[in-house]
Length: 277
Image (cartoon, rainbow, N blue to C red; front, side, top):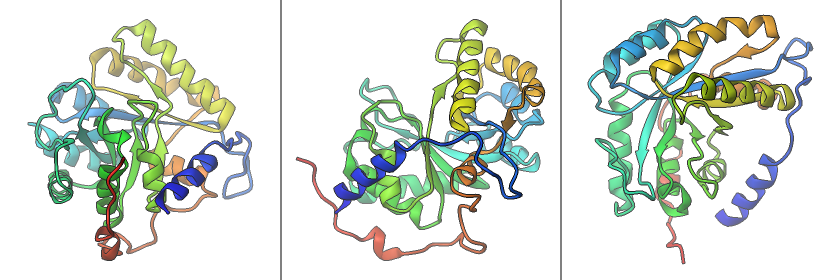
């Protein structure tokens, strides 16, 4: 049944979004971008600069890093949206650090590790994957992750570190609000490359109505955002949080009903799991 739901989810995800879709007041919604900054928590200076930005960017924090809790509290005071940047096993065997979800973990180990990471980050509203090119290809551990997120509830963004990721499809099968990264802004740390990727992000938003970019707290990235984000309004481009972009793509719905931030559907977490062939 899950594989059928995944197929349906993939078909739905392939449908185009429209830039001129009406908003809640019947007016056209401007092209909108969401920017997620990953790897928050270990760089105090750049973290503080990002928090000081006027635009509603979304900040994804690694668990248990030196400045994770203090920066997350400060970000919340500045009305920034906060995510857990959950470390997941990758195909290169790069070290995951504290809170890592590995390929060898049992269901209970995955759930316990994820739950503790979520508890370590105040004001968390969603999750995306840090690395994860191995784990996000596997249906079973993704089911374990999504069964836990469903209980809060929280949204999920697939960072899409590998094209064959099934993470967002499994999230949709679990009825978790989900989106997928469109552009990485700074995997080359030069101003020219960040500029090229940022313009690509804006172009995608103009074409599809909205787009999601992921960057990191590198000095070159923060310098670029400080300079260029304030110019977007004159270009007719809006900046929004992840949850706001989700709402734009879903007929202006809110992700979760009022008062729904509590454990729900515990039987879903106990559903039988399947081994992949």
